Length: 465
Image (tube, rainbow, N blue to C red; front, side, top):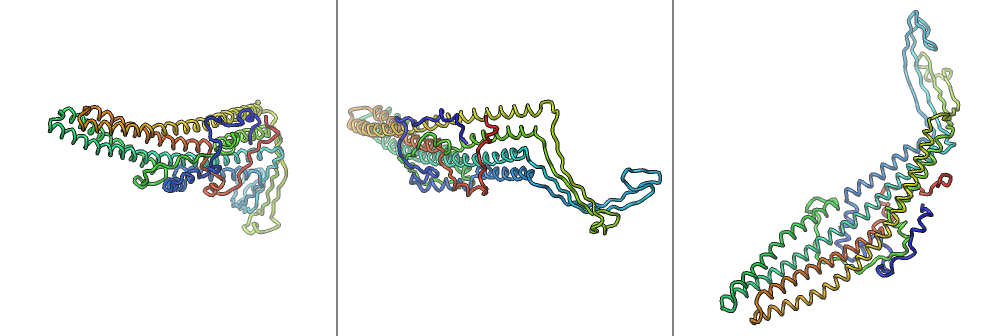
């Protein structure tokens, strides 16, 4: 259920200068649009093998079981009872309704006891609605966990591949540094340079070699995190490809109001408001009369055969009614508390709605800016390559010293690594955008959840405020 109050908080359009106007409409499995089989396979594996997702799924099972317990209060109860009792009374003893004085009696009994609360005031129905809401919460939490899990797996895969590219860049630079060191030493031996140039070349080489262990450690950490996400043992999460996924497949944002049905957290907030409204009705119903029917029939006598003797029956049945007359304003206070809880739920829904819109706008803006930065760094990298080649040629010809070469090479490596990170950030921001839109779950994902009809989220009109 969407509160009418949200209409004023829902913008008609997204910010046009930073938000794509068209793109992929179906974002339920957004990773499949990136044309990256390895990434898609790891995400699908995580959706099936994640232990945290399995726990979220079990919370749905538990919520449905609790709903079944609560719903049982709406139905008649029927219990079978059987008993044996031996009663003795002394010669001077007296028990009202019991065995006569000085007697020794066996009592055998077999019967059924029935009871049913007639929910005329709707108290039990409201409690069942509250239990339905718990199921809805668990389902939306499960969906939110799917959204977050898919995004986290994708982020770790991107991080690993970006680190691989970074390691390749540094490794290639190390090979170039070795060549430069060989040139510097040859020039010094030939009398065209001095040992300072060779020392500078050795310093650059050692610095780049020292960067490799840290990069490999970061990659190992990312692999271990990925293994946890997909529910695998350490070492079983292998990422072979070193190419980043496509980042030009953008989601179609639709209209802002679509978020209210796309994002599991907003759907949950709506259900919280509906559940809070139902609890008001349950507390109000506590002030109404409670009607119930009860009865019992038994076959009872001093011999075991009386338990099957129709003439040994005992029957009792009748209605009952109870009405609270004085409770120290306990019921009224509980109604006030439930109404306060409803207002708080509405405030949380409003806040979550505003935060969701801002999150989408932020993710879209950061994606666009990351793409701009990546494009600019591609141009800067070409310029740095040209500058390094020119510096090396001039050093070889003796027109500049080696300091110019080391500076140009260091600058080129910095720009190359910045470009790799910018491309990584661009795909990460795209993942953020898909996540902010609620991509990663659909009604088909219910196949991973024990089937049952989803409860209605509509709030009772009699208690809505």
